[in-house]
Image (tube, rainbow, N blue to C red; front, side):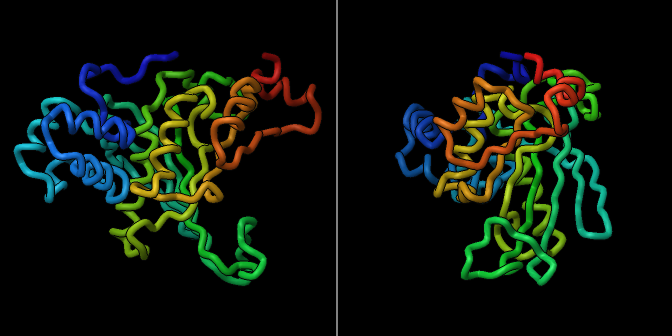
Length: 265
């Protein structure tokens, strides 16, 4: 597997840890078990950007956490906004790499299309605020139509970095007046990178984002897109219940093989 960001590698990334992992850490630090649930909620329900923001955790506990672990938080480096409300975010990782996330609003109305709407809701009944997230810095798939492919693959994103794209954008949307504690309603893993080439971290990020104690997204409202890594497609279908989309980009196998080298693997 491609190495992740190695700075402070000996200290675990709090945002990448499951609730059970946090529970083990809290126990090792001599704190009561409920502190793990508090910490998990701060990380994934409230999307805290720092340990200092976790105001109901004792200062001494936060200091021990800082000594034993690290908290990965992305910085929003630039935002481009379209007239239709779409916002493209360039985010900087802690090791100075850049990734992109794209917010796509679709407000309820007669012209709105929601393929996931229940029949009784009728067309255009539900507001969709979707974020397209990245899973890698660069990409190794080499698709001929993709600008990210020209970068090559620099490294995988951690589960925490994948999740934090959601939390940084939620915070920015609240700042500009989009309603709701969690303005985003839908997620698509269709940004930079091939999600199934970063399989373990993508799976962990989904576990965290689906957690009822955390961001609490619905399986129906998350889609993972792949260029076609067949062994991991089969595995993903067995291990996860979110939606899976396969990118075709051609009408024949011959055309697709020219555009997408993964088709020849």
